Image (cartoon, rainbow, N blue to C red):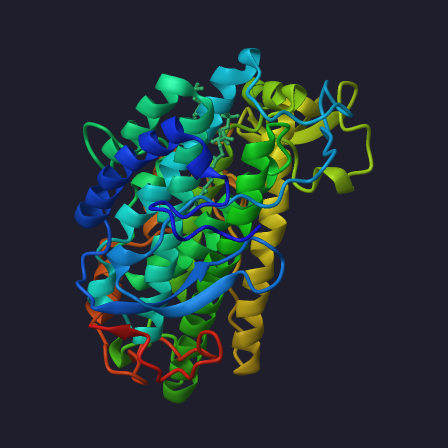
Length: 469
Ligand code: BYC
């Protein structure tokens, strides 16, 4: 399954054989490049040390080289087709997967693909200006790697829309370039993708918490009975792993530097010494975690029950689950707020699948917090970071409209608002972080608010010239 790079659009889907599709995608390509020029990275660069996919197999799929950003070969790469793959869940369980879109599921599948596709360019837009304040060339390179791959993930969804959804699909593909993150008139679809990513702490938090939602959502779409969607998500997940690595190690390095400064100056108040105080790190966690939880939709959703029953969207690691994979008689427990108290209610498992996925995600998020606390403990500090309660600062689902504290108390609006500044970044916190964001473009040098990485990229040292400006 090697990739054909001789084509204008690199691909492993035999695009050369389908002239109409190839022409349609080739007419979308200049619009994509125009969007990239207008909404992609604002910092001009000569070239960047990037990885490009050369095959979709398990081993050695990536090639590393310095590439001018606009020359990056965005293309269409699907994981290898498995012979005799069968639907793993829902009412069609056991039947062969679909190579075409069944008419009755067309609208739902298109909607899922559009929502997924919308997030990819949104994140590039959100991160557009970060290059102007990168803490090191290593970080700058990672930012651009994430950006080009999010651009490729947009290609992945646009391919599906063009290849399988006819004229409506092509119109949706146009719209994916017309909505913009934070736009008043035509914003991105999901809330978190209209928030700003104005500084590098936000970027690390976004790649830790929000990209991780991507991992879980793609994991459920990888289970889909619609085989081309499954195969494209399988390959996207390979690229996604690096994005979360950027988040995990980015926050590691902030916590490391913060801990060093706390010890060196024997105070929590390390702002005057050019660091990011731990309570500010916690507030950023609280914000990014809570807006990312909103991305899982409501705890109870007939949408998700229908998607599952129809075979469109499975559960995380569906095939490893020890149940009947139909769930028609199963129940699940989800939280709710009743008369000012948090209670658990029993519901049909099918309608609670968003909460099921969110539970997997929360457990995964906790592993990072444990890492960060080990770093603090390694410096002999008692302070710890934590994930706030699932109901804290929520706009979607059962907690929306309630005022829940990070430790899970239901408060009245006044008490919550009075404490807001202790829980979420204040204007002063953001200003402090923003003031630290000054670019460091010299190879081997790094800003003072973050520790250097343990390793470089692809065996290169930290002082390698990852980006030529
Ligand atoms: N903001 O029935 P419900 C990624 C809407 S991230 C605004 O509970 P459902 C990435 C919802 O659309 C992964 N609106 O929702 C990360 C519905 O509207 P309608 C992206 C929201 O359908 C970093 C209504 O509220 N992929 O890849 O069960 C960088 C009722 O909701 C929000 C996907 O999400 C929100 N947060 O679940 C780059 C996968 N949440 O129908 C990339 C595809 C809900 O009443 N999408 N609403 O008009 C889905 O699977 C589902 O659509 C959702 C929502 C999980 C998003």
